[in-house]
Amino acid sequence: MTRTLAPIAVLLALAAASGASADAPRAQGMPDARRMVETFPIMAAFKVYSVQYSQALSPRIDFVTGLAYVNVYIEDRHGERIGRLHAPTLPFGLRAYFWREAHVEYQLWPAWNAYRDRIEKRWYPGFDLYNEIRAGYRYDFDVRGARLFTHLQYVYGAGIWPGNKPQRFLD
Image 1: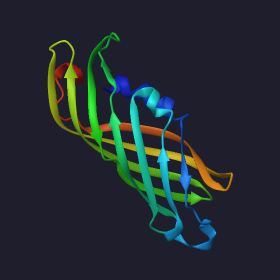
Image 2: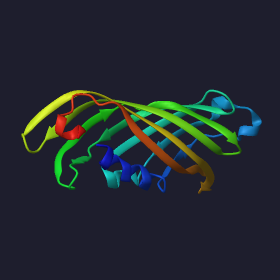
Image 3: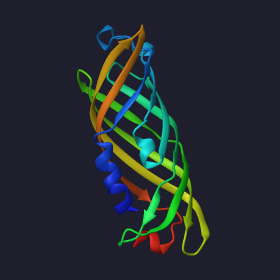
Image 4: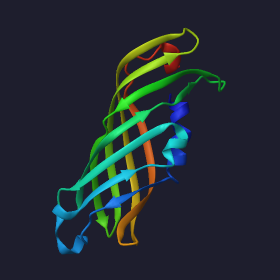
């Protein structure tokens, strides 16, 4: 799985999250007004579908949670597809702003993952835990009076708990 997710992590470094914001300027110190809904359109190209909601906990810290579905292929050392992940996920984490809109973010992605082994034609269901650290910058803009934003982020992620993967997926 690491071989499959490594290129995704690199490409996600260039990906932008976009969404809508009911955001008051951070300088006004009104964290209750900072709520955002985020989507990740570039991630869909990698079969990762996610919608997240963030809420300000303080002028510099946001809580992030959402829904995601991960449906990526598992490849062996030779690049042959040997299986697929089917993982409904409930990601959550914190985003900390340290200078203007520059931020770091940490998320956990717990999932009920059903691995499909294409060779054995068998399902391996089980719990899976993935984590990500992100560093980036948020750009706010208005379109016809709607407050929108985009995040440019570098993303690095790795599995913490592999769940019930077939041994072939771990090699």
